[in-house]
Length: 302
Image 1 (cartoon, helix red, strand yellow):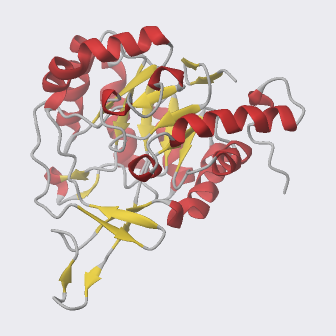
Image 2 (cartoon, helix red, strand yellow):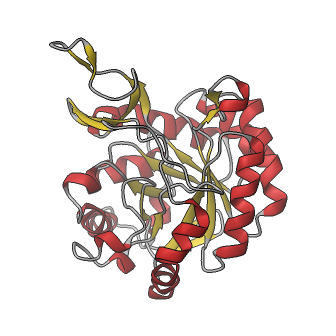
């Protein structure tokens, strides 16, 4: 069941998504977090961010919508609160991926420099390039191949560990190629898809902002298609996510070309989901008659 996600050796292909699993310790009462392949931490910036005002989350059909605004304690605050636990989690066999957030290239650089300094236990660093670039009018940092590659090129020399890029769900094949060329070791996709939910009685958004990111089963089929497109466009591994709530969902991602599979929104309503997905994938691989889960990566037949 072991896989290699761009240099991150995972004991199985199941990961948890940034922003849905806290810093891991919060879930220890529901499952053995050490049994997972990896966890991706809540995205952290160089300095703490307050995020958006409440309400930040609401339910939508077959999923949820959020506008959390990447509220986080900053890299130093995260390490102070959870560093010892995360170092121990690595020793238990679960790889820890620290996600860096920023609103500009300089902010990403500052975040990864702090991660390099303060997180020696981490197995990898992930760049969330779905953040708005406030220095350029709020456009997505990774909304174009050029802008995504700019961030990766700036950060790459400063990261000594495997570097993943969390992509926006736009133009995935071209942006995937651009990130690979700029030095990314693996890609994570998809992030949430922008949507709206209106309270028809108040005529206002059900969130504090007009729009938010839709996640959960509602976007799963779209995510599988985008993972397939990205995996076909690059040679580096892909970490597939988007509406994964069962081993069958995860198996779809693997067949579409994902080396690792990430559980996100399901963690909120089924906190032991990731462990069951890992167990189900092992049974599926045996059922398929393979000795190695890697034999099933990209095995989709048109």
